[in-house]
Length: 399
Ligand code: GAL
Image 1: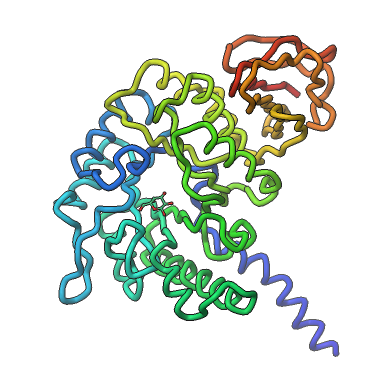
Image 2: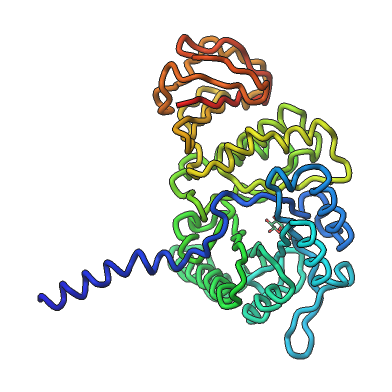
């Protein structure tokens, strides 16, 4: 009995150490950078990525923290006789590209799938995980987005249907597939941020850290329109407790500057992602950066909320009709509070209590309005003002 107890105690002391080994020590704040998919999709070329790297530097994005330049799907060619993956003609020199990106003080990210094919039907990593991870390390890759897509058919083949028994088998396969690449990446010895893309299946936020994920997608794909952004925001309720330094919920990449988003919508999108401690991966065409979009992407105070060292994602503390209030505590003892009008009409906030108490904010704490860059003083007696359709009031409170 005593031996059994000693053994259990020894295992219990080992457990936290084993868990700590899962972490690669990267992404202590949410990764920031740019990804090719939202603008270029399947058309992206090596030259586009080089140009993006140049513009990330010249626009000031790099110095604001946007350091990952991530190539999404459609760079892959075929495997040679020994199974080594080649790039396709759009990416003639991946090593040269990595060197170029690194020479600018940036990092290079890449994309693959645990299936035999990626989502865009290019070559995936199935049965070649270590070979691919070694190749990434050889090139100097710093970030991998690993997209379930092509592996879903293997899961269906192994356990057809969607009843509980089939789902159990499929979910196990999915976790194993992510763990296989995790181990392969670790074996390379190169620090590579590991980004899971499986749209939130099987509550990935509960097991992502176990398979070494630095971030995991919590939703399907974002689109460049406000309903898509609002829907994603809605589905993040309840996920705050799963985010922490090194392990982030990923509500998908930014669409700031894409589609026909208005200035208010771009600000609400950016501000909401910052509240969510989301990765900030711009997805716009950097050759067409306007001063307005630059100001949204480079707002230092918004970025500071996203990158706050405490790493606590916002929770929703209030919702009435289209108006919602989200709050997150910050490392300096202060808080960020976002009031969002997801509705179509102007809304007076006069009657709306800011719910400071529920948000954990001291009544007389001084408030700073981030988007209008104004100190508001204490809001103890309420907030007077209103929000246009899709507008966000973003406040930072002192201790
Ligand atoms: C989707 C993924 C997108 C993009 C695309 C590429 O599955 O969610 O973000 O990576 O595949 O084919």
